[in-house]
Amino acid sequence: MTSIAAPPLSRAHRIGRWALQRLVGGVVVLAATATIVFFAMRLIPGDPAEAILGGPGSQTSAEALARVRAEYGLDDPLGVQYLHHLARLATGDLGTSYSLRMPVADVIGPLLVSTLVLAFSALAVAWALAVPLTLFSTRGSRVAALVGNGLELTAASLPHFWLASILIVTFSTGLGWLPPISTGGVLGLVLPTLTLAIPVAGFLAQVMRDSLLDALASPFVLASRARGAGDARVRFVHALRHAALPGVNLTAWAFGYLVSGAVVVETIFARPGLGRSLVSAVLDRDVPLVTAIVVVTAAAYVLIMIVADAAARIADPRIEERA
Amino acid sequence: MSDIELLTRRHSLTASRHTGTVLAGAIAAVLVLCAVAPGLMAPADPLAVNPHDSFAAPSIAHLFGTDESGRDVLSRVIFGARDSLTIGAAATGIGLIGGTVLGIIGGLLGRWAHAVVGRVIEVFFAFPGLLLALLVIVVAGPGPMSVIIAVGLSTAPGYARIIQSRILQVRVSPYVEAARVLGRTPLRILTRTIAPNTAAPLVVLATLGIGQAIVWAASLSYLGLGAQPPSPEWGAMLNNGRTYLQTAPWMTIMPGLVILAATMSFTVLGRALSRRTEGRA
Image 1 (cartoon, chains in turn cyan, green):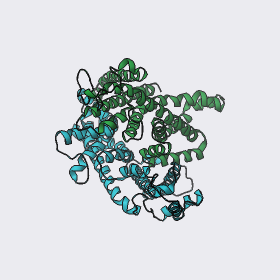
Image 2: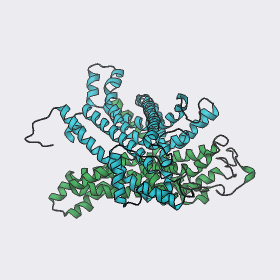
Image 3: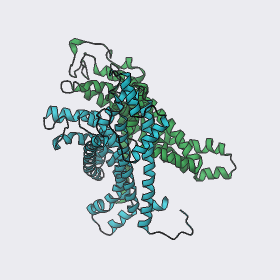
Image 4: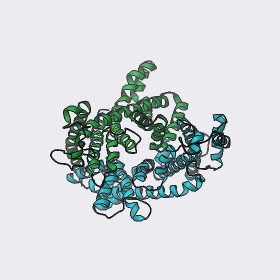
């Protein structure tokens, strides 16, 4: 930026102002997602009133349909309905689920907790797998590099639904150690977590390996070696810290990937959560529930992106100058 | 460890990378051959039912085993290559076209267009990827065509972001500046200078994207939203195998291994291409 007259702001102040701008932008993004959901759900063939009364084929009388249309304002022009939809969301009213006949806020709370538990345990396990893998593949031996690269590539290419099946066949059917369904309890969390974590670990390790190799070849590592720092110190203290920054950025991206993955994983392991409910809610044309799930996941994504960007700005002041 | 050691280590990695690229190319070539001429490659008819031979474990007669109707799984996987690769390639094509259009608008038409496209991309990134695909399929009805459009649309914002930043990079590059100083018209600069330099990364993106698109499409079919049985599309085969996971795991393991091999080989090829184009630039 080329500000001429403005006095220089303190760094904390600038980051604060930047975060505020990002938050306002985030609200715009949320409104846009709610808009897309509203109109996309209208494009689904069929009568919305019928969907509210239990889906097509449910023998509903004309009077019942008319009553529902009046109650839900379905006879109003589409624009009016859309504005109502946004206004309700803006006041925090998520409405009542068509299919479950419960307030959406009550439905979504436990689902959100369940999916977040899965997503965060998957992220933690992914990091726990990726860091040793990165250190192993950059050990310096050719064999380690080959094996490490092969493992990263395989892990990152594994389709969730197939990995889940393999884990079930091995650890449930074969060894009988873990339950094939995930209805609560720590044991039930293990296989879904691994299914989501292993591919993310592959992506993380790839990104960190590249930046670790760059860091190891950089002048500052040479300088600390020249000062007499041991190999372990150089690796763990100096280089790994550099390598971790792209990993942190990737973690924010991975969250979006995990939500998509949760759709498949929660379905396979019969685990309650946002992903599985999203599929059934879309198929049931449950507009309030779909809207809530989308807005909640989008909000989580926006927040995580802001936190990750802020962390990157604090860690690396050059980003601010470039922007 | 000295810098020299580091350099030689990278050099020896290059050699093994080359072997990997050749292997990946061979796998991709076999898969494309299966897609083009499955009749030549498959040992049996993928739809031939044989009730006496159902749930046979992998053997010399049936390398990948048989399914619940006694159909040869290997032959089904080979015939499924056509559906899966076509869906993957077509979806990547749609994603790239959408991404290029958005990227050109955002990269060439000034600050406002850039801001608007940036916001659009941000909105689509905040959308859970699979949800967009799900909405498309529910609106258009399940089937391979819907999966192509769904996966294409879901991947377009990612391509748009890369293409836009590439165009912005190329626009301020010294060679575009040089063309401008030489008095070239904007149209000529666009078609002769900006387009070729933006298009090279597209080839890389397309190769990397096909593998991902195949997995996405298979995921949707696995959820019962894409190709429907008795189609031997890979995701649909896995969806079918899910019922018999305990008794006939090969119905799941074998098609999955092929999906894995396909994704990995396209990724390795894409990276090799990426290294080559970067080396040239």
